[in-house]
Length: 93
Image 1 (tube, rainbow, N blue to C red):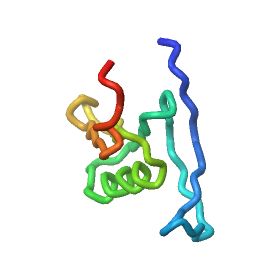
Image 2 (image 1 turned 90 degrees about the vertical axis):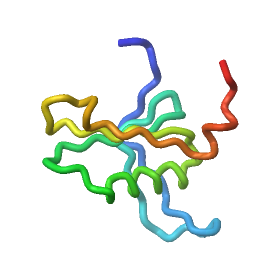
Image 3 (image 1 turned 180 degrees about the vertical axis):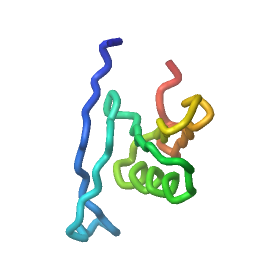
Image 4 (image 1 turned 120 degrees about the horizontal axis):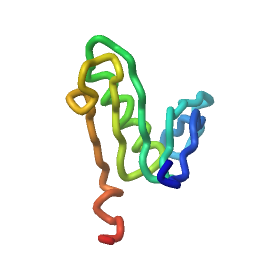
């Protein structure tokens, strides 16, 4: 609605030290080619979901990720925002 470029279900290869390990991961949403949004609908947010998002951020070199759980009364209470070192080098505009 705000004119942002949003891609869904983006597949990324699993790389380790520059070598493709043969699998793929799937990002739920990629906003403006900068922010990864991972969507969940679970009763309890566990640390594994944050680790998953952090792995996606590191593999794609994206600066920011947001984890959102829709299985709750207030989404704001169930959102987790993560940033990587790539965030620090973004322009300050």
